Length: 486
Image 1 (tube, rainbow, N blue to C red):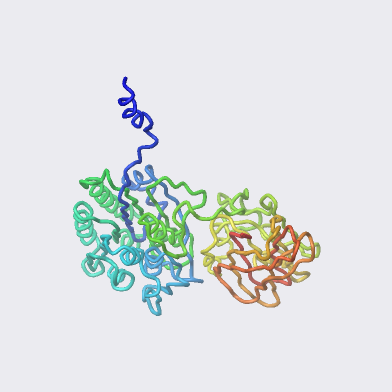
Image 2 (cartoon, rainbow, N blue to C red; image 1 turned 135 degrees about the vertical axis):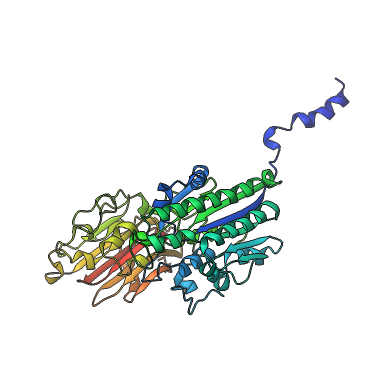
């Protein structure tokens, strides 16, 4: 081989398969909403297309807020799903939409439309208030029917047909399709009925048609499709919703994609996930699926009830064994009460809210997975220990390195209810020295995201954070989650 020929060949030899970039696929999003579909019933029903979505992605049950924040009804539910923020922000409390702040919290479709006007946005709904209230603007095309007047069986069929056509032939960058007949079957016959299961089968077949329309697109191989399936609330066995029972609060998120989060996503994550997939930055309450910050409390090993009688024995949901590095210190003078709440405990929404429903525990929506709880109200339910002493317990973090810092940021989720002389404090101790109170909780503050700047003394090397609830009798409670010192 001549030197000239070798010079021509050498660049080709240096090209390896790893150097060949994969073609960038065009992101597309389809969110399908099944009104009033209970997750347990959906999985138990003959719903092959739902199960196929689960097989190619991820799905998990989640829990709604309760009456402390909003009714478990469609107005708050779909507002939460479509905006990505909780009812304390969008202000939709029930189906009247009275006093809502939706103008300040646009839907994910509108956010996508505003950020990237070239995107094709679409919605098809037959519960008309979604169009009238939540999706007023922000869609290039909107197909709206009135299922309350015309009936949801026929309207769902028309919605499906229109959406099939759109998904098969349009650019269809961002789409939302709503189907309503499961909810009507739940109201008329109950979640345990054959009619409810039949409505699920019908909507499942329609979901299958929507997925087939996507997969038959001429450019499907060059597209990156995110498909999500969700619901706005559950149903009681006899039918109905709006209350605080686990069945009414039962929702779910099913999503294609590789994410397998250890902690179940929440309804606000639907909008966040859709927007990230489309490359649209947004500040919402949700996290894209799989991106929620790691939480030390989620490593706790939970066990079944001991004294609490309102919780099924099958629900694993509490422990006093703190995660590695964390400590719980309960005052020696604190009398013995309900075992589960003898000082700070680690628990879950499913366990804690069953202990005393409809007392605003359900509104602890910004906590995820396992969180810490000090609950004098429940502690006092065995033997009335508050008649002889006070609840006094402190939760303390591991030592954090603060060497060379002039200040640090302390963040945590707080769900606090105040009554009587009960006191809650957050304090920081540097290098094992005296605790300095940096925040006092002495008024109701539900589902708050707390962020504090804490000054670091010159020369300090470590800091520990403590949450103390004390001077409490038969009062309320404090839940804390996602603590972080950065």
